[in-house]
Each structure stands twice: as structure tokens, then as C-alpha cells.
Length: 126
Figure 1 (cartoon, rainbow, N blue to C red):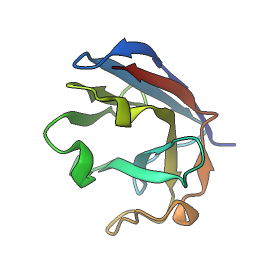
Figure 2: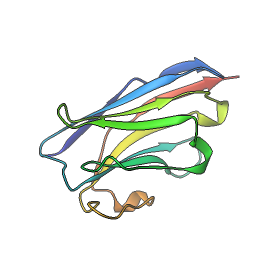
Figure 3: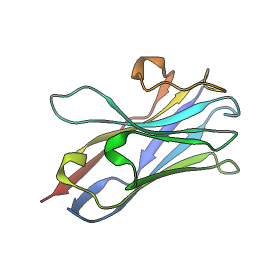
Figure 4: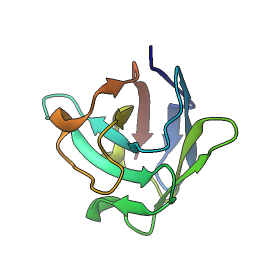
């Protein structure tokens, strides 16, 4: 049983930084694509960033390019999202997700993902 657990959310002022972590367990993720999504009140779930677990190649959504960095630690089965220069528009619940078919291709559609964490709230005040 795959389990994803996020941590690290909180309240931060605009311009500040936060670091989110996702602890993954239940299997090896060699052929997975792992992603971070976010969902603001009244909006759909939005792709933020993703990483090919084995290769370490990364993908970013345009709104976060240059501000967010995704990484993974294979030995500890953890994924991290370092967020800097935060703006109020980044306020949302952030989720980590796993696509078991993501060995060579990735998707920004949340429906493609097989496993989800419970989410962690990020609030950026102006």
C-alpha cells in the first residue's frame, strides 16, 4: 500500500520561503513520476512541479519557475518542494502525488495520478 505524507506547510509573509516534504512508503518508486499539486479555495487542482524519480529530471509550471525547486532523496524515499519568493497567489493546499506509469512520460492532469497525500496548507500573507 503506497502512502504519501506531506509536511512543512504554514503561514508565511510575502517574499518568504517554505519547504514542503513528502514522505513516500509502500514500495519502490523507480518507474514513477512524482508531482506537487495545489488547490486554492474555489479552484481546481493545479500542477506545480514534478520529478522523474529515477532520472531526477524536473518539470515546473510557469507560475513557479525560478521560485520553486523540487528534489527527491531516493535513499529516504522523500520528495521536497523548496518555495521561495512566495506571493499571496501561492496560497493553497499543497498535495504530493505519484503516477505509477510515469517512467518516461509525465502528466499535469491530476487524474493521471494514482496516489495522493492528505495535503498541507500554505498561506502567504501580503
